[in-house]
Amino acid sequence: MDLLLKEEHRQVREMARKFADDVVAPRARALDEKEEFPAEIVKQMAELGFLGLPFPEKYGGAGLDTLAYVIAVEEIARACGSTAITLAAHVSLGCGPVYMIGTEEQKERFLTPMAKGEAIGAFGLTEPNAGSDAAGTQSRAEKVDGGWRVNGSKIYITNGGVAKYITFTARTDSSKGTKGISAFIMDTATSGFRVGKREKKMGLRGSDTVEVVFEDCMLPAGNLL
Ligand SMILES: Cc1cc2nc3c(=O)[nH]c(=O)nc-3n(C[C@H](O)[C@H](O)[C@H](O)COP(=O)(O)OP(=O)(O)OC[C@H]3O[C@@H](n4cnc5c(N)ncnc54)[C@H](O)[C@@H]3O)c2cc1C
Image (cartoon, rainbow, N blue to C red; front, side, top):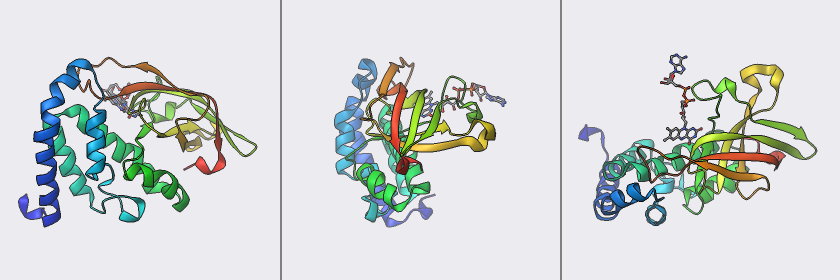
């Protein structure tokens, strides 16, 4: 397996392993017992560039690849699952959709601060009636003058209570079935957005897993991904 790794991957592994051993592991038990979000560790991961590892430098990332990112998550997870899922949800779920399907303008506005670690990202798909079957999505975004009005809620959202930006899915056309669901990105400071129930979990207890609620949230047209 090591034969597949380039020098940059070995360097990431060494750095992540040292960070996991020195900084993450000593705090993992307490974070889990107290159900405490690893805020200080996330700050340090941002300084190391982990929060934007697989994204191009022009968007504030480290310019490495998916393998380097996976290696970092693997090393962190060895020490603390909660910290690892916090990182993975930010990178894959928070930043990923903007990087994959966002416009240049959206990448500059949303991906860049997230990849730099200045803002945490989250992703909301799951609802009480939409999990494996995303077609059950009931949150809706109604087209109005100048943008969208969003109503609904999402459950089990990792980083939902600490995120600056949340990408989420909502029904935009109920006559079109699965084709009538779109993805949007919202600043969680938007009026009408609030964090609901916090999950009490059996594991990953330091990770932030919450319900998020949208009540007449107004989104500019440019926030449709
Ligand atoms: C710790 C944690 C963090 C999470 N973070 C996020 C997040 O950040 N964002 C987000 O949107 N969601 C998140 N989720 C939600 C997660 O994505 C959903 O739990 C998942 O999609 C499954 O949906 P569900 O819970 O509704 O289960 P269900 O879809 O109801 O599935 C229940 C069981 O039925 C099985 N099943 C379902 N459909 C079928 C079928 N057709 N045939 C056979 N078996 C089937 C499933 O495999 C599963 O075992 C998180 C969940 C957890 C536990």
